[in-house]
Image 1 (cartoon, helix red, strand yellow):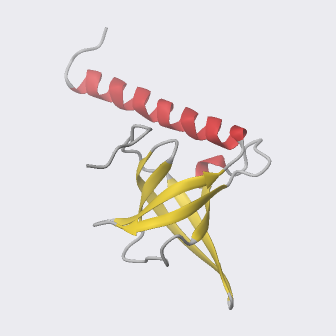
Image 2 (image 1 turned 180 degrees about the vertical axis):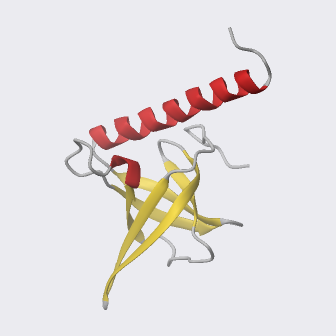
Length: 122
């Protein structure tokens, strides 16, 4: 059984993946299926990458913010049923804090929606 350091949360964030090849840069737009502070599973519609390939990940929600370089370098780990699993390798603290804030905001919103749905509003 796989042991995780960080809990993964189901959250759909828009992501842009960039990879460099000899013939130029390849850019793929997709969504996260789940994300943690250490990695993510991305819905890539049957697109895959060579194992351990370094990818540049940009969360669209971070673009245009006050972040200097809202990107995370990640490593492709494996193909999954719905896409690919990646492990975050390098990011500045500001980008990681912003990612954490987005995860917490999504959790808060989902909790409020469930409270409204099931009449548990306090």
